[in-house]
Amino acid sequence: MLFALPVARLRETSTLLAFHHPQPTYPYHVLLVPKKPIATLTDLDPADNAFLTDLFATVQQLVTENHLTDSGYRLIVNGGSYQDFPYLHFHLISGSEGTQRTTA
Image (cartoon, rainbow, N blue to C red; front, side):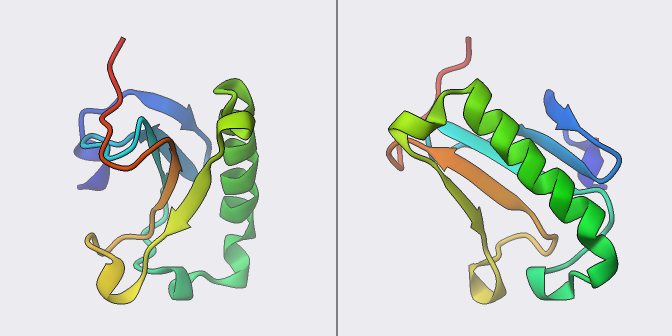
């Protein structure tokens, strides 16, 4: 179900998929999603350490490649009533909220 979205994959590992948000609210807005079905952050298990390693390595690569250090960036995970979609996912964002990124 989740991976049926028609997205261009920025990164794919054995544990995660990273792609531009289909409806971005920031100039740079990437979603990072585990391949294993995990509902929320609190459902992560110690056995999920390979996903966490891939997550942070992927974020570091994207920040470096897109020169986000100088402009600033945030890695966000929502939970509880802030989580609109019941599947764990992380947002890597940069820029001002409400400014759509342009597609080259």
